[in-house]
Image (cartoon, rainbow, N blue to C red):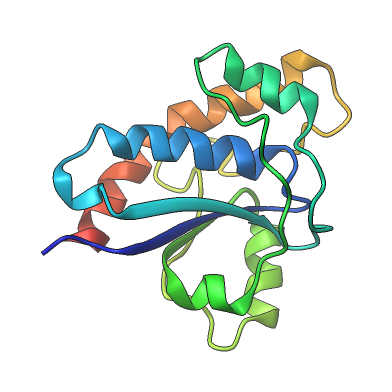
Length: 159
């Protein structure tokens, strides 16, 4: 039976990290077996102002790996998203803490994007906002490194 539902990538304002994370994860899931075809990856921010354009450096960082997020507009994380989510994947512990404090009920699979990276010394993806393109590329590369282990974990939730 095919899975349905959403995976939510979460950061602060939904203009840098979570749009990149969602696009990278959706791209990775597209290469997985058929059961993942109906799983959508969306992004949101714990303190996002709806409708803000994605950071230009986020667009450039993903363009360099063949993904286009230029049309993304920010949205605030909602309880409905949390309720529909197969998994909620946060960039930092502070994002997870905000959700734990505000969500009712708390989502079952509230994860860190880098949680499953073997031997990772840092489980968080820092905020590149306002930094040079190299900082955005470093955040992107941390996400790319995280995806194989994250996808393996998600496979256990979707089956």
